[in-house]
Image 1 (cartoon, rainbow, N blue to C red):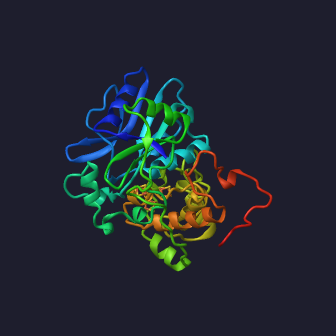
Image 2: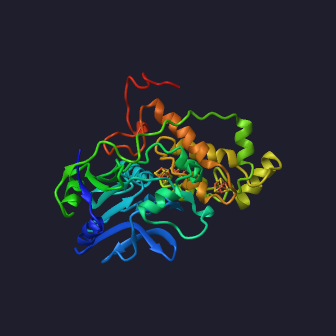
Image 3: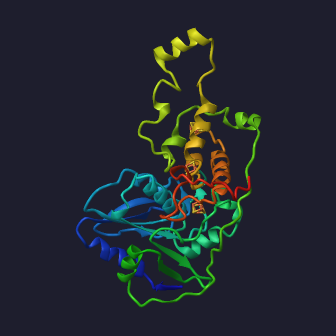
Length: 336
Ligand code: SF4
Ligand code: SF4
Ligand code: SF4
């Protein structure tokens, strides 16, 4: 495959050229006093970082309900973030026309809760930081796609440590044309390989209830999940989670109740809602103050369900989400 080898700061230069234009923005990461966080850059790329080995949130969250006409945005994010963006495009929660999405090879990430000391931001530093594979989050150790192969373009790292940019769509070609140099044949072998196989996840209700017994129903997991996007979530009203008068009327009708109510129902309904679009990023778990192993459940269930439909969330713009499609002869290759 042909791509452009990224020499020195060619990527930053290309993004810088993009920012020179009126109403153009870049979303990526910023190094700030030993920390790296998401940032939307306007005018310049001060303190820009191509990579971030610490996971706090999934950046696709900030793109939801972005329909602006005129603004043009390049996002350079991890594969799980670009995959969530692609799912949101399919769910008509983001207008794709204004965005060029670039995924970058990901060595994995640690939880922002486990961050200790300065965050490495250069690729060599990050690679050696992840020399011990046990360091990564559960989501990363079981990641389906760590390669920058999704979106409009991808940044890949070859075995000699060279960075390459590959275009996957017309928009990706345009971005590539802003970069110096000519396209050349890239090595077949890249540092980060094919998808890892994820084991089918199964659990009994007793373990599920035990794991979720600590839940305080703060709903951070819902609010930080990039693909849990409903404005009118059913759990905001009184129907599922009555409060005040509605709660006390219910208690008078049905008897005493433990609080908070509806924990299992909340998680089962959320699991059902995101099961086909979950990208396994673990942002839900990262947001949970109670340390509940949410990724195991949400990613586990969704991998299994997506597998039944030979679907992978965020793999492609053209692959329709199974619940949005009617196929008469569906599930003929189901293996579950
Ligand atoms: S889930 Fe995958 S893509 Fe996302 S941070 Fe972890 S390894 Fe990277
Ligand atoms: S359910 Fe959790 S793992 Fe799945 S997309 Fe949402 S935040 Fe990521
Ligand atoms: S973030 Fe944790 S405590 Fe809060 S609702 Fe979700 S699982 Fe429960």
